[in-house]
Image 1 (tube, rainbow, N blue to C red):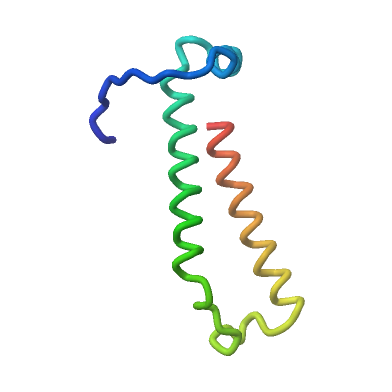
Image 2: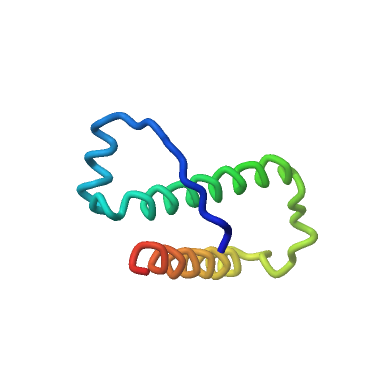
Amino acid sequence: MSKKVKTHITLPKDILETIDKLAGKRGRSKFMKEAAEEKIAREKFLKALKESAGAWKDENHPELSSIKDIHRYVRGIREESGKRLKRIYHG
């Protein structure tokens, strides 16, 4: 775990009230940390998508040559995402 640093941020009152309702006043830091981690991961993912645009070539992926293969591949990704979301939201 990296070193923790105390900081000061400004949020609209309604957002802070919603965070408090969801996480409790004692849970603000954890909530904000997790929200920031999710946003960072999403931004890194979008950057990687932009940088790799056009890199996929059908001929390099014969294992995905049929609709059935593609469905199996997508199902696997969705299952992994579901497991990840359970870890994030159900700790």
